[in-house]
Image (tube, rainbow, N blue to C red):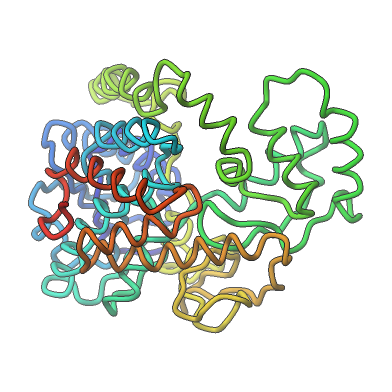
Length: 433
């Protein structure tokens, strides 16, 4: 079993309790290990630490938990860094979502201008993390869950030698969205999704061993005129049939952007504003569980659920225990595993993780019907990583203009000026208009 020192950057976040519950669920794989929870709020760090310590004790685990608000000291001598943090909190995300709507652009956490701003804030922090690791933990690896995970990985890979791999459940959870919308058994739809994070498509898809698309087309034709509450799923099904490729449902923002924009503009609250309303109850629940002898997180009162960041935890275990696991991950396309993308581009694909590292599987090319938009988003990814790490406001506008959700240069310039001014507290001076 692995005996490692793991820093969790974002350990006092609203996902922190669920993440540490996941680690304790895998506890025997990490028996004897040390966890350092790093965040800005000591009170919340103490709550997550107490919950974790009691879970470890009740499971009979030899686990050491400490906390740090000093990032550099928290990273000292660690073997691995799990990153899942949100600079500016949900307040900054609310700006990402709300301000673009004024310009007729969808505001979203990882897509379009919202994703650009999240990347600028996140990479501003990861740059500091990398500098600290070079000094105090030069052998450490980064297992990243901070959004946008692909752009964060792109920046670290382009500008440092620190090993980084990012994770997202997307390639696992997107195919069932299409199957459920079609009224089919999700277990029988087998689709291999690749591309860039949150923007991947299938290059292979079968249903019960047969070509999936004639079956999906038949189901779509039967259902397309019927009322449904699953508008997101029906859009994804429509897109799958039209493009003959199973999509990430994030592509709904690009292919149905007019109707989604209207929905967002008419909604009373954005997604982040809804989450902000729920945060006090999450923390009340965590305090209740910290005070109990046997903490048990309730799914409906925990941010994201009771088991968080599972893919990264599985990857950490597979690597440090040399216990092979097949997982999706985001990594540079060094071996040309995904045709049509540069070797330096961070791509999302499936592969095996073991004690020797991450071993991507060679992929078939994406269909021509969908390859172009992924390539465009990959170029946007590269431009945004550059702007975030070393660029100016002009570089950020250039990146924003390359995103398919942004309709023109004048909109990009005006939108970026307002977003950056509103978020100046979380951005370096060089990125301010």
